[in-house]
Image (cartoon, rainbow, N blue to C red; front, side):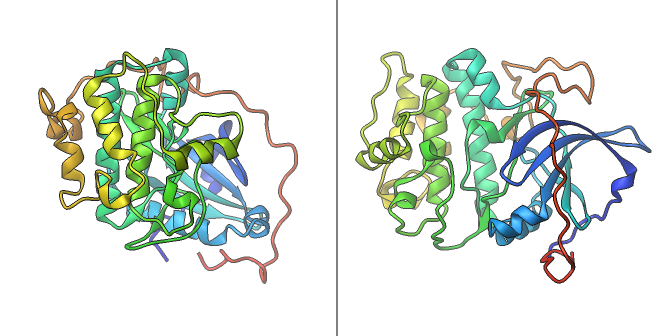
Length: 320
């Protein structure tokens, strides 16, 4: 089991909900002794067991304890009781990239490149540890107070040096090899990068449809239409990423991530070291009053019913 810092729930004040998921929610949390703010991911043990998600949750916790990177949301501590698991995470107060994209409609080439570059560095780091992320989307990218991105929600992430077969992800972002159940690995993340880059510049994902089945058909057909004003160099990179044949997809060739980092969209005035050190000024800095400001997040109602407790015999997490 991964190493974790054990915290005591009583030392924290749980505040408003920042987001909800299929078996839990994330709440703003304040440490009583220091006044520092965190995000607390609270998962219902009962639902995790019922939905057969125990392995995913164990994997998420192990990965969170293993990663340390300035563009990833890190695990600060852990606690549990008979009803819930509690992951204490860094609080990133600028809201989701999703919200910013919806407000802006589309991003200009420099802004999209700034965000795309950070995602490349996230995946380069995760893949170096044989972790595939598998759930890239604007909702899972948070914006910090400097305007830089932080990747969150490692529920679908997995250690994988070869192939895995679990169907997971968001319909619009699924790679063809996931849909065809051929087995997938690190290449899926580079496909998702292509989708995200397209979405930032076009304001809509390339295989958009109301009906998920129609989305899947479009993904498998692989025909991409680019708006007339789509940046020419970015278009070239997207075409190299959204390639169904993983042996020809950028990020998966002999040059690895170097093919993406060396692409002409990044060549001219681009500095990967300055980006990694957060020295490139962000175009958009979120408006934040203080460290506990939640104005960049949507409002959610409180959870109506407490989750029923899990007996010790049935509890797969009791030895954590």
